[in-house]
Length: 115
Image (cartoon, rainbow, N blue to C red):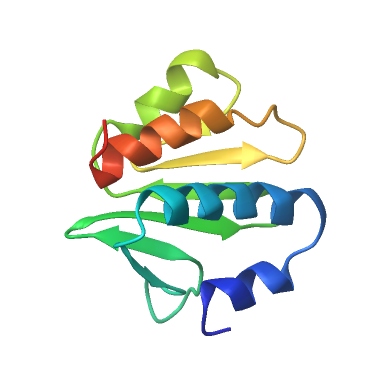
């Protein structure tokens, strides 16, 4: 898996739809960002960088993990979605959880520079 599109093709079902929605938002609003399919040598998943800021998305066993490279981004999701597990730098959204795309997009914009 070398590209974000390869990664998307490897997914199925609801997670494919949800991750594609996030990727489409980033591509439409940040066409100049650096796009790759890695964050570290051990894990390969879509990563989008603008300068030092980044957003990375991973399909896990039962959830999608979205990592934000800016402090405070996960609070944007957590404020209106208390059932979603958030940590300092990531939000883990289970397949059965509501999909808070508007809040995810706000957190992405906060992270990549369009607050």
